[in-house]
Length: 260
Image (cartoon, rainbow, N blue to C red; front, top):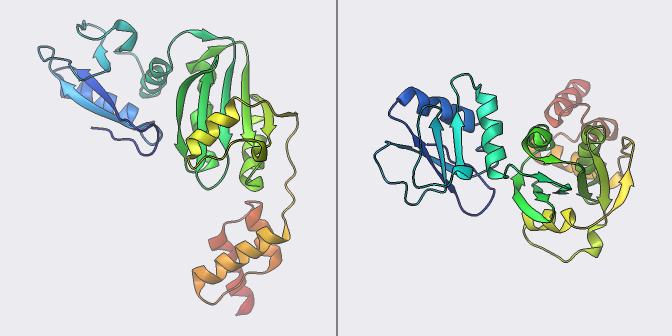
């Protein structure tokens, strides 16, 4: 069984139709790679069992399916790698058709809201917990959803997180920055990302050079003091932490060495 964490509200119940435990384990391993972003529950189901209550099914290539529309069935070939299974399942969730425009809304911050839209239709919305996790989600997007135009729209809040995301994606996608102050307030990160996805912003064509503010440095220094109970790192080390040149843990270690 694979259970995702925060994403869409309802878990997706997926029937893995097989009597071969090795096939089920192979599928489970493959989908565990996306379960962090999409809440799914896998169930091993024998071919003779009812598929009532299941929206999706995964089957080996030599097995037919009754009770679920074929557009909701993933056929796994013997030669498919775990990565291909994962990508093909995401393609299944986001539909197989081609869109005129795919827009990706991103609400940057400690919890990063994400919403993927295809011609104004919501394909997926949820939350990721780091820029690295977001990049892992978006890297295969062009092979999952076909479109003539891909636009990433990112809110202008959380400058450090925002700029880090822009700098990785600017060579892959059209990037627009959206003024969040002009959008309706939302308590949900995913809903904020949806509002950002449907709101045009100003175009960014180059990587961002992030200038660390005094406020950011002060917050990092305070965090170092809270973390250790005694050590406050220097402004120079705090700036390096803000630019992700070193970790906070490493900065504290360096500060401790300077004091000894």
